[in-house]
Length: 290
Length: 236
Image 1: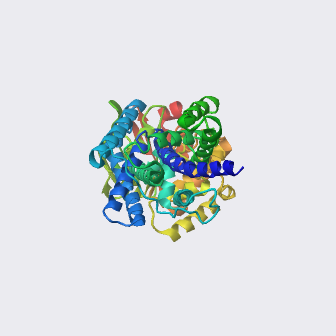
Image 2 (image 1 turned 45 degrees about the vertical axis):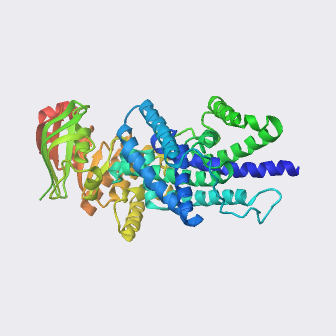
């Protein structure tokens, strides 16, 4: 039983990283109906920036928040420079741009920071203050940080005028323009936010997975599975999906299929969700009166 | 004094030209209606005011030249648009829709006050304040769309077929409200309608569009008396 609980808790910890990636994916999907395939690599690159800052002597939490800020600006720039020109183009053009971005970020990270695997220290104590036989300090910290991000993002969308404007622009861009919202900039802000959220996921993943240009390759798949499982257009679903995927993956890995086949779980979930319930757990069938 | 002056307006969808040298005017405080059959260019004319289609020609609004300006700047000058299909944010609540209408305003107190005034005018919206806008009836959605536009405290309200898809009684109610809004709030209106008789009753000036050109214009009463209009658009 203890072993089982241990697996559940560590599943929740990795699941919260998947949840963050899923949240970033959902954020961009909601406004553009595209899956940003480069989300993971952008997060990885941001994590390298955090690493470089820490190497340069910046204290962890300052580097943490600086990285979030830099990722935000980076996300906005990526949207303005690379995505805006294909905004109205067919899906395939967008996919190609995303794949291009993925390769560019991956190659740039290798070029600037090389391919030697680096350790990335956790800001949290090794020992968890509570339940310390089931969960490590970093795992608890990861869950806590994720919770913090979710609260901030939720409050932003729920309570601020800009958040409302972003929701409006995502839902009905034509009408949003007619009330004076600059829709294209709202998309850019969405990219910035998604990049910031992704960067947090990267920084939380790096102490466990170690930092190299392929840090997020697997995580992105889990994040994608999480987003689909939760319902690709639902932010709440992304969080629940992330936690579920983390726990399922861990338990199956420990008791059923072994650690080597863990990534298969993500793929099975993706295919399973898409075939059996394409709307996911919380994705809605849009119902309106005419 | 003229609130809106349009001279030689052309508009395109891609390479297809939809308006050909349309000119019209709107007095401050007045209601001008644009009539015409399907595809005559009525909706395009409204879209051209907000620059959501490609245009050329001179449009001056409240003393500003707005041709070539961005939509959000034009909105900030006080032009509110109730688009065809109402443009409701169906997934957001009634309250959020109204708050979005006031998005470009900075006076918080005034916005709260105006929201109360909308609820006084349309009590049914208040009952449904936290409901998703997509769940409202057609008439309620039209009231919401008009309220959302008024939340801007506009000088000019562009209305694209406010009668569309509504029961005759509801249409009458909406048009009564429009008249009241024009009289008490002094909001000028540019009204596009298929229902010519309704529109001519409300408006003081009327323009008749045919395939992207103005073919007839004058005071609403005169247009109503015009025999060809009566036969073609009023049906008696």
